[in-house]
Image 1 (cartoon, rainbow, N blue to C red):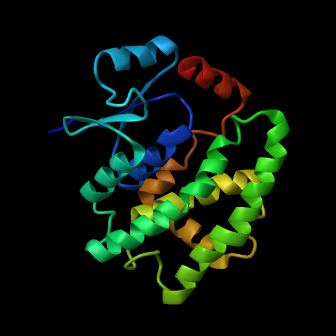
Image 2 (cartoon, rainbow, N blue to C red):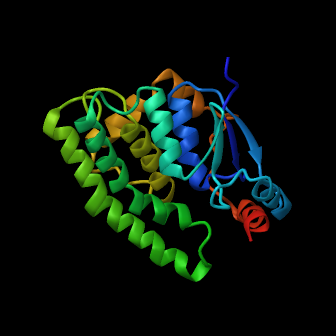
Length: 221
């Protein structure tokens, strides 16, 4: 029997959080090895574990996978969260990649200089409320089904719900005019695997505070 996947990253959200969410939604237990110092990162680089000298890196099924999309694609395929055919996978990819612009803005918010935070937050609110959330609300309204693609949970739903949570932390009323997105968030959150992940003490990471940002900078710069 294969061991649990091992996630190599800092003890923060960053680019690993989407991977944590997807594994959790799939009901897969995983271990984490946190990079706390520059030496921890250099050790992985020097032993050949990082193809492009970067993390996230996930050890899974005898592989050391890097690059977030490759990792997420593998997990989604292995655990049947990637549609039933090529057409559904293309739509899932489109919905997932469409969110990346917004997710990047949210991801960077704790790390940018203080004088840029207000402007970045305004950009997050504008893009969430006026571009991205209306698009996904329209998808759900168009087919009236429980999930974005094929009436079945996919990586697109998991990623969207993760982003909804993260945007709401910064903009609590962001979903006020999007009842179908709120319903999707509730539906996914109530799945037993996700419900467990959302409980205190799970491997889900909180919004980065100053202490966390300092620790990340120590490990990666």
